[in-house]
Image (cartoon, rainbow, N blue to C red; front, side):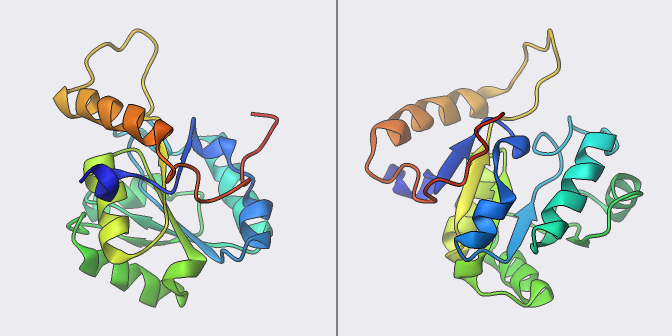
Length: 177
């Protein structure tokens, strides 16, 4: 029952992944959520995120931002990032993931979806048959309000960590983070 919510892997942040290892394992593209995955909700990109995208592309991976945000939000975010995007995506509908694969020119097995929400990013990727990675959502120091869904996600994550389905991505993590 809970399997549909389980990601293929879990990481503390997008900086915890070794994108070269992902490429070596056969991945050719990464689909990212923006808010609370790459930056705090509503924030512009940071120099660190801009550099991360350059590193991802240098590793040979394509990128696409898949977001329920509007065009204005996406344009503000990608000022220094060269990437494909789909805004107003209607996640977790599988159709937006299929469209992303078409734009990237990759197969499901060659693409990884990275997001911070189990009920949106992970379940959407899983429904579409695309490997998913859940990252811990970005929280500002002192921020205590996280919403009811986050508590449910935390409970499901505790079951996931004890399941045989955890870490189906293998060793794709950066040891220095």
